[in-house]
Image 1 (tube, rainbow, N blue to C red):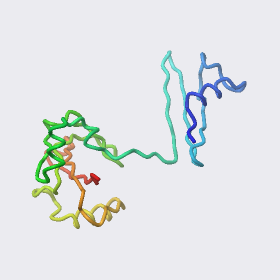
Image 2: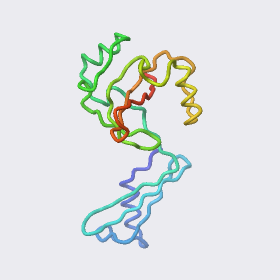
Image 3: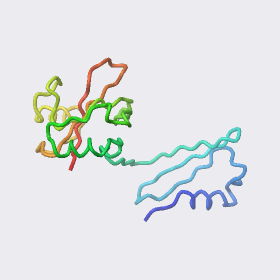
Image 4: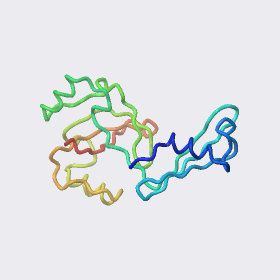
Length: 168
């Protein structure tokens, strides 16, 4: 069961030991039960600006989908129906992304159904081994349903990095 942050803040801020919600100062801390895990939120008000940070033991983000990138429907439908189709950067309105775990900012150059010919991996098996050995992440045994995002990190030059994602 969820625990609405607004209710927790209102409740905690109204406690006798808490500062008034109109005069928050210092570092009030709110702890929320989250399925047995803890999440903490720090609030600070400075010069009329509210700053908050959330610290959680586990944070889960849904995988990036093509729909998240606002790719036009005709382009997306063509990509789904044609395994040799490529979604190029000019068809991706939302090209900026942050890659976990480093959170480096990159641009999505294209999305394909196959590993690029000019990339460092000659097969899905090589890519799978790379992800397991370098990141501890185990990709599915079969390549079926996998798509690849080619990402460019500008400070690293024009080199493209391939990131796999299971489409289905």
